[in-house]
Image 1 (cartoon, rainbow, N blue to C red):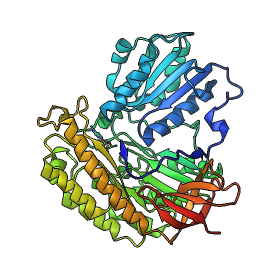
Image 2 (cartoon, rainbow, N blue to C red):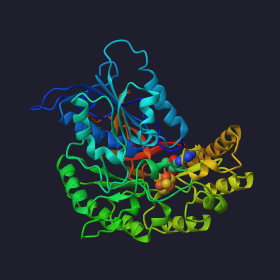
Image 3 (spheres, rainbow, N blue to C red):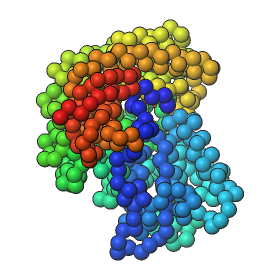
Image 4 (spheres, rainbow, N blue to C red):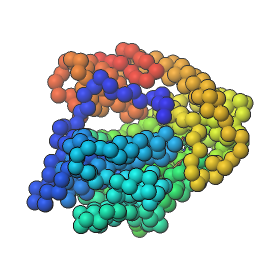
Length: 466
Ligand code: 5AD
Ligand code: SF4
């Protein structure tokens, strides 16, 4: 993935306590050994891993930070592009001739769902294969493994259950992910998610708000609602809260300072969401609204359900808000048959919208998707050329946009501390990364005012304004 928005916090020490990194045995349950869990892919996967870790800890496993130290190794996988899927098989290959005690290996997530039992044939040392739609069966599957079964699978997608657990072990002590809808009912012609994550299942608003209350009581001040199409949320309970109403109810929860949500689908992006952001400052003024292409012909081939013009109407709605709302997007370059002119339409869309951030990808053919059998594949070098042009344009757009913040004061949620003395990092409500200096100790987790003194395409620089 080519990111043109978030900077890596390379020079920063992550703000989480050591206890979360190497979680301990839970007291009062039998000790079962150690596990190492590595996550590939999106925030949904990251959060699923937090839930899986919670289930394992509650069963008496202890989390460790290296494969070598673990008796049970789990990979939570991503198959959205071919490279991500290949990476998993290269990890699994490393166990072929590994010396020492054989380890139990589990493959979770999208590659597990997609490849199923074929994983056992390709890498016979794997003993657990489980897709995300079957995670609610994880305790049962783990029991089978613990009882000595050699090959255990959870591969159903015909579920109406969501994966909820009281046991989630969150990595970040201030910002909590909370899944409100799982799966995807859209049918974009290039995408494996509807196959790997199953149909859309929303969690009841009562259950979401109950968990949010607990999170607020535990000191989490920021919550991020997650869903592959988060704004397609359909409350299954009699309250029937709309997505925007759920955002407002969450923002009103005592102790909650910020509510984020990702990813929004343009088709279901309705005016009441913008009105909610305008009404309550605790709802973050950032919308991730993937467009994928600026050409209506390509959008039709992608089965995105909107034209360039209809998408731009959604953008106009966002721009019409009283608060400035930052907008980020996803783009695929080199979709089969994409002409030079159609690619240029994507560039002109970028110029027109002036996104605050873009995640851009070269099209990658995926198994079982309609696009896989489309003719007119774009050569790899051409995809790379288009990607480089797009990234360069977006870099200039972001550099110009970020310059405009210089001199302003922004509220930053402090999430990282640099190894360099007095240097901190965090996010604004509109999801910009701000690196700033402050001589104050213990800022982690706080919300502080920062005066912006400099800017680069990917972040703002500033000083703590007391
Ligand atoms: N090839 C390239 N990018 C893809 N995405 C989804 N499927 C593919 C694919 N086959 C991108 C889309 C989506 C993001 C999460 O990944 O841009 O919004
Ligand atoms: Fe994939 Fe489209 Fe669903 Fe997004 S909306 S997860 S791109 S099928």
